[in-house]
Length: 241
Image 1 (tube, rainbow, N blue to C red):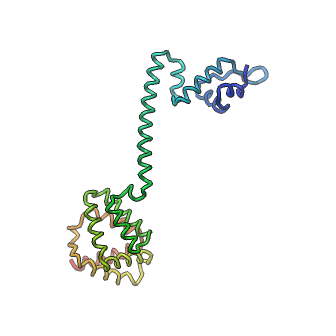
Image 2: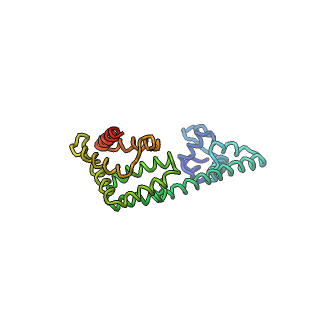
Image 3: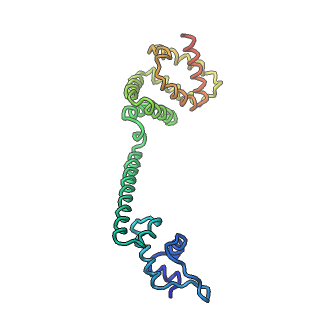
């Protein structure tokens, strides 16, 4: 007769595993003997080895009991079902690995190449990484809302940033990120941006894609100073209407 430790050693499992199989009802737990110890016989070793073999093969514990008592045909059918389930799981994990590998590309996992080029251009002219993150998130939102329009919008913005004055406006916006909403420099910056925008004849709000409203909300939430600046810009736009 064997102690639980000896049983576990013969079957190549831990004592904790034996107790777990007891709790799951897979392996009968013997009653204590006169000395208060639980003793296991040779059949327990055989049963435990069968349980361990099935578990190591990937059979869910919920189905181990079913297979332990199955006849040859039923056993083969169950194994086929379990194998199919494992294949589906492998396909799932393979897809997860593919996606995880894609994340190693950083922003390229979320954005098209045209937008990545735009973000690189913003870095090249001196825009801070903090502001790059705001810009990136705005493009992620746009890519979800209007994916077909994003390449054209990104190309237009990239062309715009070839202009030194446009670069200056973007650098000024970056600097204003940390300004408080009552900063006296904000009205002057609003005037500068309004004059800059007038060069491009943007038209009224009715011509503006509705998706950009959500982007405005995202950018507004990034900084109290920027939120105040956008309010000033909208006021100036309304005055000209």
